[in-house]
Length: 342
Image (tube, one colour):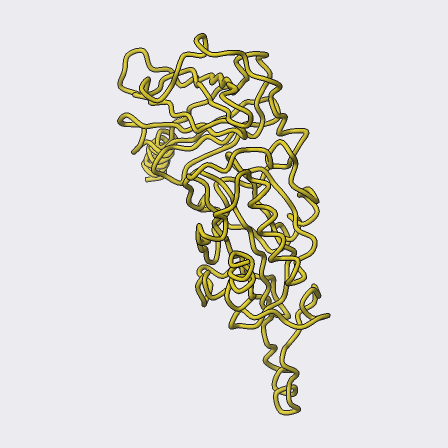
C-alpha cells in the first residue's frame, strides 16, 4: 500500500512538472547590443507576463493549456511601440529560447518606431535595415524606476475622460494636467515610475472614510488608524471591545497607450506604501517628451486597504465603492473638470 501511494505521488508530481512550460531569452538593443532591462513581456489576451532583469534576461512561464497551440508574446519598452512575436510549439523548428532585439528608429522629433526580431507577424514589423540609425537610446535603468507590470490586483479602476487631456501634445502635458488637479487637493508628493510606453503617477497613502472621502488633517496622512467623525462616549466604550477598522487608499494614475489588466498578484499595504520612496519626484524628460498619440489614455487604479487594530491591513477586492466614486469623493473629478473647462 505504501509503495502504491509513493507511485501515485510520483505520477502526480510528474503531471505538475509538465503543467507549465517556459520561453526564455535576452532582450537587447539591435544597434549597440546593450540589454534592455524592464522590458515587459506578456502573452497576448492573458494576464501572464514578466519583465526582463537588469541584464535583459527574462523567463516567461506558460501554462500547458496555452503551450498546446500558437500564442503571441508582446514586448514593450519605453520609447518603443509594442511588438508581437508569434510562437508555435508544434512547429518542428520551435525553440524555447527567444532572444529579442528591439531597434528604436527616429521617425520625427519625438516619434520612435520599433522593429522586433524573432517569431512575429511580419505585417506588423518593418526591416531595420531600411531605416536610419536611432539616436541615443533612453536608459530606463538610469532614468526611472519600474512599476510592477501588469499592475497588482486593484480594488477599483476608472479610465479618465479623454476631454481632460484634449490639449496634451506630449506625456509631460498629461503629467501637468494631473498634477495641477492633485496639487489643489494637497496630493503634493507623488512618485513616478515607468510603465510600457508611459508612466505611473502614485499618490501618498491616505486615510479615508467608508464612502471614499478623505479624513481631515492630520488624520488624513497619519499611518495610525484614525476614526472619523469623533466617537460619542457610547461609541467609544463600544470601540474598546469592538475596534473600528481604518481605511487607507493609494491612487495610481497609469498613462500609456497599451491595453492591460491586472497581474493576478496581490500587494500588501506595507509594500504599496514603499512606492512613495521608490519612485522619482518628477517625470523624467525621456518619458515626458514622448508624443501623446490618440491611443493614449489615463487609467486610475485604486488600492484600498482595511486595517483592524489587532491585525494586518488587507487589500479590499473589490472596493465597496466604484473607481468613479473614489474619484468623486476625493474631489479629483471636480478638479479635472474645472481645469478642462478653463
